[in-house]
Length: 267
Image (cartoon, rainbow, N blue to C red; front, side):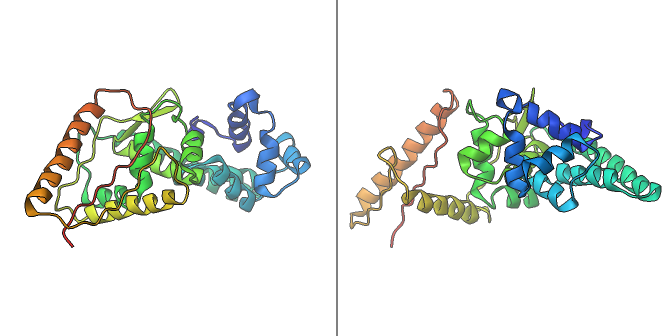
């Protein structure tokens, strides 16, 4: 759902609610709980000439999982409706137009087969969830902000901002209201300064999973003393396994999002 197609925040929220299962039954109750308001007050806001406070509008934008630009637009719509003078209303009307233009400009910046800049690589590899969200869009059942946020236990606003970043750089794309893996790929050279950040971020995620591990998972730590020949054979075998896995991954339909960490080093 494209918020920039709406000129009234109440109409946007109503459309968002109706897009949910059972035509949004019970959604206004959830919104009321998220905002710390009574259902009566929420009903009055969305069925009369009353309006949300700016504070409640911000909380609602967070609950809806809007990204930063969408959030800015939503708040501008609310403040336009709340404006007590023609002069102030005209100010927010102009602001709304500027944000719409900005959103259109971003859509024009979708690169094809372009490498990320250093700053963009730093952002993408700063946290595990950038690549996790990107890869998750390749799996059926994880095509919306809500589905991804629930699966990864992340705030919807975080997911929305990451999705916006991924779309802007061709790493994901939106089709018919669903997010999918984009045409562009990411690659880090072995000597990249972002390798360490990427590895540490995913390893921290692995440590978190150790607290809730199941029989499907495997965490192995095996310090040992071996010969030089055995070490070289082990290193070669691990490299061979990874090469075979990389080739087969692109041929089969993805069903699970996993992280495979391997550390082999001399102490």
